[in-house]
Amino acid sequence: METKLLFYEDPYLRETKAKVVKIEDDVVWLDQTIFFAESGGQESDRGYIDNIQLIDVRPEDFGHILSEKPSFGVGDEVNLVLDWDRRYRIMRLHSAAHLVSIAVEEVIGKLELIGSHVSPEKSRLDYAFDGRISDYFDAIMEFIRPYLEKPHEIVIYRKPENPQIRVWKLDRWELLCCGLHVSNTKEIGQIRLKRRNLGRGKERIEIYLV
Ligand SMILES: [Zn+2]
Image (cartoon, rainbow, N blue to C red):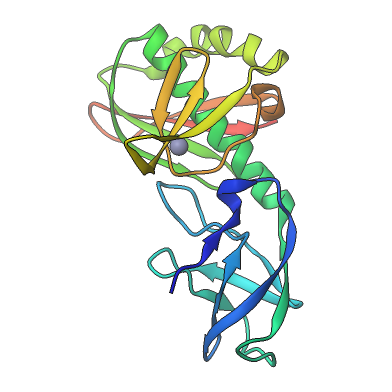
């Protein structure tokens, strides 16, 4: 059963209707959805399906896990409402993480990325790096600042030879990404960076919205 993923067509879509195709206890499958399921380090969305709280979305099969067994049935049309504040923070923090990763490469050089995550509170990038990565924060922020002050378009396109692969593009930089992003860099707003040392040779950059 294929669920149409509307968030890829329009990550700004906050509300829509969908048809229920299957129900198992508190898990619901729909013909289409606006709710992102955890993938590539980006957390799942929250929201409501016909006023019942959505507590998670399963990435393996797009089962929507509700807080209670629904009273609607298979074939019914239901209303999907996204927790937009949460999602918009995730989109801003995901785009911010890509921007910081570009800045790291421009300022320090190509480092091995050993982990990354995007939540509504913060995003993080983990690098294999000997040294204090925060020594470079001023230079990184200097690189980033013009992008936060003026809108630079963020383009997402699918690889023509493999439409499953999505490419995130900003100016001359491209990254493979299956997550959701704001449409230009100014939407990220202001950010602040924090360093965390994860042990010898491992450095984490945490990114917060301010
Ligand atoms: Zn990404």
